[in-house]
Length: 117
Image 1 (tube, rainbow, N blue to C red):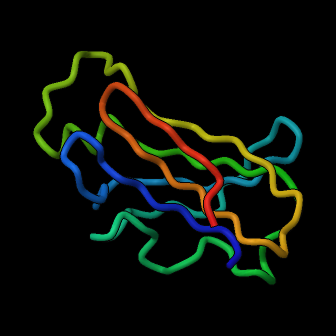
Image 2: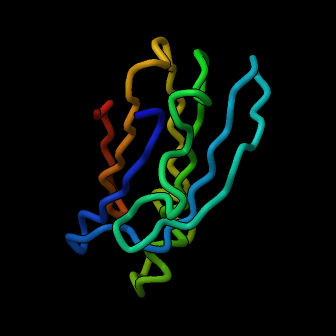
């Protein structure tokens, strides 16, 4: 429960191990960095949920996924600048007592996301 994320590399068909992710809280137009982490072998935060039920509050959040550097690290030749550099997802938490799972499915040229559970 709480807030979690998971990234799948759709180009290689595997979790995006090693991708750097940043979590922010949004307070109006100000983004406050909460944490920066590298995804583990399963494409998840190695420390577990980003927020547990007690820590997740109603409000706006941002996840920033460093897509270009991840794919360059995998040896993918990307144009300069890369089509996708960083993928930024702004999302709202209206009911913090419910689980918010924010997965990202990504390649160097496309991505999709949804609210999971």
